[in-house]
Amino acid sequence: MKRLLLFALTVFCVSARAQAVIPLPEYPRPQMVRPQWHNLNGQWNYAILEKDETYSSPDGQIMVPFAVESKLSGVQKQVGPEKALWYERSFTVPKQWKGKRVLLHFGAVDWQAEVWINGLEAGVHTGGYAPFSFDITDLLNKKGKQRLTVKVLDASDQSWQPRGKQVANPRTIWYTPVTGIWQTVWLEAVPETRIQSYLAVADIDKSSLSIHVDAEKLETGDIVKVELLDGELICSAEGPDVVLSVENPKLWSPSSPYLYNLDISILRKGKVVDKVTGYTAFRKISAKKDTDTFETSNGVPQGSLRMALNNEILFQFGPLDQGWWPDGLYTAPSDEALRFDIEKTKEWGFNMIRKHIKVEPARWYYWCDVLGIMVWQDMPCIADHSKTNNASRPEEVCAAQKNIWALNSFRGGTDCDVPDFWKKNFYKEWGEIIDCLKGFPCIVVWVPFNEGWGQFDTEDIVKFTKEKDPTRLVNEASGGNFHLSGDILDVHHYPEPRLNIFDRTKINVLGEYGGIGYLVKGHIWKPEGQNWGYSGLCKTTDELLSRYRLYAERLKTLIDIGCAAAVYTQTTDVELELNGLMTYDRLEKVDASAIRAINLEVIESQNSNWITNTGK
Image (cartoon, rainbow, N blue to C red; front, side):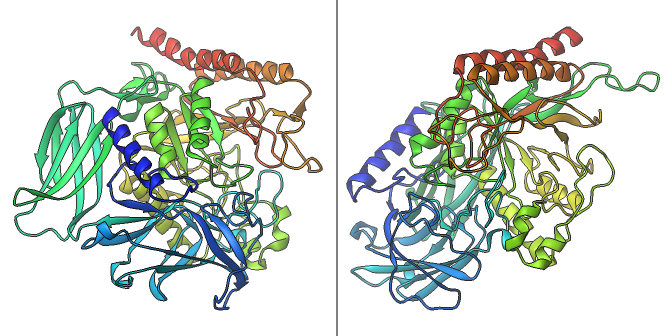
């Protein structure tokens, strides 16, 4: 992996020297690196206007890529569904890009973005979590400055768009809305014939790696070449669809997160037309029986299904990670900060993170790959059951989301009455999210629904998810409204861990528990706010650690009867919610070594139990 990191660092440094100091200057797409790019983060003009009003002049300046509601944006204003947020800036195309196609990339814009170059429409994108791009070459002036304009509409929780925990009326587990550009905006120079994307899928049982390359405008005789490297060339093959055989491949795991480099090129008459560098890993996630007598004996099921990484049973244990920041909201203030949360999670002894109701920038998953942490990836919800937030919502939205959430039962749960247009949009956005993330080895579980929030047509969503990515487990409905169509039965229980329902035909997990609250003076979002924790607020850090240890002991008993994974709430405090192991501004509440010792005991307890039962 060293060669990729060094190359990427070189690209970052060249980019940084070529322009003024800007936020998040790092290369935004580490799985597919090209050397010619230009970061457009920094100060832009902005205006908040009536929805149908045309932009003419700015209200002021905004720091991109921070959402307009955030402190780091320099604005801190809410927009709402009746307004539009406008962005404007100019840029110049580097002279050395002459003869290349110019792509304009957006990491993510929440929610609808309409983009113009020099007054000509480049395109429209809907969806607040997936990257998108436009080929703007034919819209550019022949020389001089180019004008970029973006109009954003965002209804947040007052419609049916995927929006996660954003609400117009923040409180308890619901947070400040996020509108507009919240990930890096950048330009890229590419040739006419180019690599659009690739997907590498490892089969550790066959020691092989299947790679599909999506290339655009190939000409007769062009060769797509794929090379796998481990410091030096291991093997190569030609064609858009290849299978590479690797003798005794090094496997990726939290204890040994080994990554291989990939070079993908298009050759024409022996010359390189286009080339990208990336990486991949050999790893496998699956379900596995924990005894040799899993089948029924005298009508009583024996054994349980567990989660296996690389064919070895491993208890997955990690925090619920909301991914919010006090100054940047959805956007971490720096790449170092983005990495910090993952490093701290590893330091605590966890081996997994549940990314809760949010999607992160590509670099977050990159660091999970590099540092070695498994990820359960949630789909941002389109609704909730919060009556306190209904005052700002249209009546039809409130009525349609009054479905029943069956928390501890196989019966009684009902679907949301989601309009057909928004059902189709859910599939579109969930599909885009899976497509842009399924190349990251760290992701082991997809979670389309949580606690019945906007849940509909569960079996169809599971089928869609499996068709999009058959290599990972699907947790169909975390916390209730179970249909038993996925791989996992996921129970929530606060504050102490419990499994109130169980099914031996599924992998049984505790998808949320804990929430041990503790208020650290001087490190809270709103001193006058209604700060809270699921188990109340501890008075001392010793009390917090004592409860954490008690819950861990109870968790061990659940592991003995078949619990295969657990998610502790949560990594950090968020706004009024004080359930974190760290404060909102990332101050640790308890000693990391103490938490680590407890967590490692929990993880090892399943491994010891499985070895004892199987004699392995």
